[in-house]
Amino acid sequence: MPMPDWLSRLRDKDVAAEDAALWVKCPSCGEMLYRKDLEANLSVCTKCNYHFRMHAYDRINSLVDGDFVEIGTEILPGDPLDWTDKRPYVQKLEADREKSHLSEAVVTGFATLDGFPVALGVMDFSFRGGTMGTVVGERITNLLEEARRRKLPCIIFTASGGARMEEGMLALMQMAKTTQAVERFMAGGNLYVTVLTDPTTGGVSASFAFQADVILAEARASVGFAGRRVIEQTLRQKLPDNFQTAEFLLEKGHVDMVVARPAIRATLVRILDYAVDRKRIAPVLKAVPEFALQ
Amino acid sequence: MNLIVERERGPLQELEARIVALRERGSAALADVEVLEEKYRQLLGDLFGNLTPWERVHMARHPKRPIADDYIAAFDQVDELHGDRHFRDDRALVGGFAKVRGRRVMYIAQQKGRDTKENIRRNFGMVSPEGYRKAKRLMELATRLGLPIVTLVDTSGADPGIASEERAQAEAIASCLVALSKATVPVVATVIGEGGSGGALAIALADAVIMAENAVYSVASPEGCAAILWGDAARAPEAAEHLKLTSADLLGFGIVDRIVKEPLGGAHRDASGFVETVLDTIDDELRKLEDEPPHVLREKRYAKFRRIGAWQRTVPLVATAIT
Image (cartoon, rainbow over all chains, first blue to last red; front, side):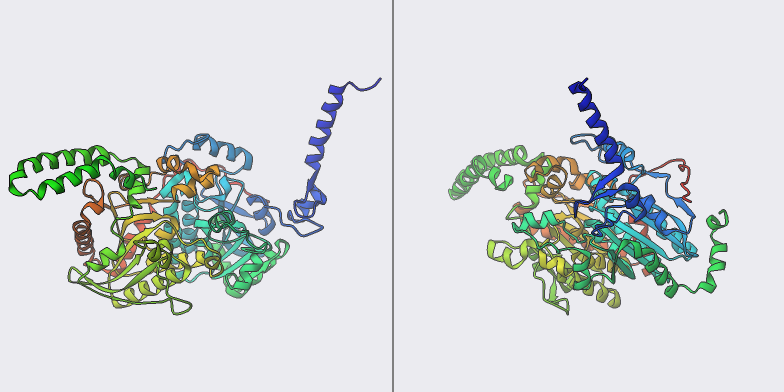
């Protein structure tokens, strides 16, 4: 007996959903990638090296020795402007919390990288486009202050569409706040490294992202001040393909290195190895109670 | 078309003309002039007494509004310093040595133009990386010489062009913020017209932030905000309502410390008087800061921006340990 139409439609839908869970199409080369292979390769296309955006916790997982103590989770967003457009801001936040499994657009904490204790911040584009509102500003500032107190190097992975519109000027002021915190941290004599990932623009690039001692850019990441769309609209002309890419930034002298995702951990460890005397790690570890707990 | 300019036409202009005509009649018409002047004040109040945020945006962009040039012309003495020492002299940002109310200062100002020709030369007050690097140079010089830094903010935003991106606009803005973080001298910033986003903040990380009553200061221009959120710059009036960009809003948030009241109908109705009032206010703020020891200034500045925000502190969520 032939399958009724509605049943076959239903089956197709199920198969499609099942397939979507198993396979991911590379937006760059079109290759169908087996999801588990892709994840094992740090979300980099096995065929063309396209870098998918990475979840903050996956990123942390790919870097740390095994321990990560998160701080700042008690700092959560409010709604200072009482903002509603299509939906109330609080609803947008709620939706993004569910979608991203994150409480805000940055995760901060302590970890060790190949034995080097560090303060680590990782932004995530999937929460409000990685925009900097007062929580991102507060968590980053908090991280830098704690790192300064503990004399730890600080590494921040940036991914941001800029300042968060829905928090207005309070969001913009986080640029001033984080810049001051970085300045104070660096004056304390500790290493500050940023890794610019796709995309890093606006208020984040014009504050703590470009202040670092060593700036790495993830391969192919789009990085700049004004977003590509804004420039194209203002100038009414199409921009060259490589404009604002990590590789373009390296050529123009804005970043120290362009690093493909699989090599980022090793690169960071090498930099830490130059900047930090391994012999002095033990007393630092002792002084940081979070690590003693592990 | 500027909404305020549009509203100044029609009845208000007619009334103005009638008053001028009547004044020419001499003392015989004095009583009638007074009646018309009273009517004029009432009309001004009706037209401009209760501006919406979007109308204030237009007030901030009014073609006759005093711009940096008008303030600089009212300084006691000025010697402009030029260039970033690397690439060029950005005409959208000016600065140098000055004396204001007898006090030696370093001034840094965003400079719009009065007409099209001047605006092209000034890039409509949109500062390029070279301008921010010049500002940074002057901030560092001021710190070394112990000169207070006086800034005038008036820009729709940092220049968003290809050349600016090639020369690291983001880094240039960040470097200004760093220079102001490090300044061991008093910093007083005044938003005189438009305070557009990071491009404005770059010279406004200050101990005292003064704002003209009808100036606006926002995270993005209303057009930019509407484009970012809704993909439609035409919804700017709506964005202006949301952004809380007026002086009264920002005083409430503690982002602005002091408002300078404008004449009814806007600063341009008594431009020279308004400029003098602003300079008096800057002088007053500098006087309050002049005896602070350098390290106290920095501590207080850090604390001032440190507390700005609106996050909630809750019981910590269970820390996520990844293994």
